[in-house]
Length: 192
Image (cartoon, rainbow, N blue to C red; front, side):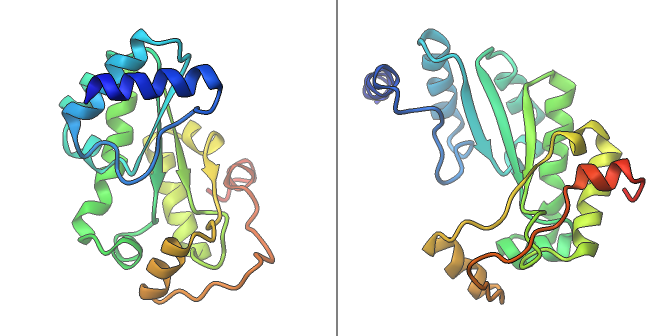
């Protein structure tokens, strides 16, 4: 299997088609992910972006320690909500799991892994001002610099995403008519 993956990665790299692998939760199968990272380290790829919800990185500091050994990896942690209640509503996960991505961020900082945080904080259709500020404050408690580098997102209209949000009670109008001001601006204004 690893040889097939290496062949695919090399072909895609040579053709200039690939800059990230995403889909599902790539950290679920630890051994497989580490094999891919081994292949990337030996490849011509200058960078591998690991997109994750951060839950397993928060649950197991040893996993982050293993990832920290790779020089070409950059982790993108995608936060889903700013409160345990909103986390459960949006993801269906138990409220206790809400803290895990934030612990994952702390673990990445502790091990010096290259990373940044992304969050659906720009879309007023799915995040309230209260939830947005709660998420910003939580990140600022970990490290205020996280807010300056925060990748703020809006919902992409993928059919599976829209279905999942609809089941959670969200009705989204298209196109998006307004967005929140960047959290980094709120930080400069002393609101966060």
